Image 1 (cartoon, rainbow, N blue to C red):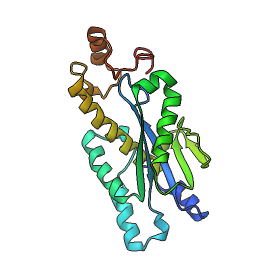
Image 2 (image 1 turned 180 degrees about the vertical axis):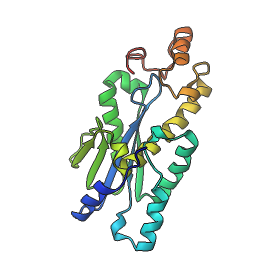
Image 3 (image 1 turned 90 degrees about the vertical axis):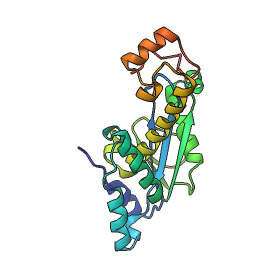
Image 4 (image 1 turned 60 degrees about the horizontal axis):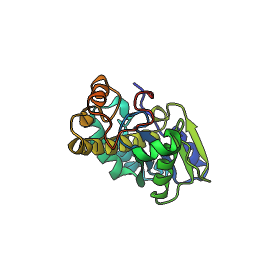
Length: 212
């Protein structure tokens, strides 16, 4: 199991950049619901006292790629991340926007909304692969970034838990699809439900049976 660390962030901190934001998405490949992007700025640990640095590092030492966690683990870590981070935010793009713009452009829009909600403005962005918001802020995009950068991993946890909560709420509005079970992804149960019930208003009609 890969646990991300702060090696990349420390490199930028040491160069004088204070606010390094990690960004990651959840829901890109789902058949229903929004795509969500999380952004997290973690404390500049080298500037903290040794006692606080140890406490903060310990607090986040188990954070990793959200897909490698159980739902309960993600919820517990999300609370710790929010308490520890200097700043965090979420950005969303709806299923209608995904159908209208395409998934890549809609994910970029969600990332730009997350950035707009983030204070302070980051000096640098570390993003997971394919997440490229239109911004003047310099970016490094990493393949499997949530397994390398703790900031990206933290963002993935916040995006995933926030989106999961929305999908549970949508299950109450649109019963029968099992949205609270599979969170909108293309399980056999979900695809059968779409064939039986048709598309709900939160389904992505443009690629419901094509994208993985």
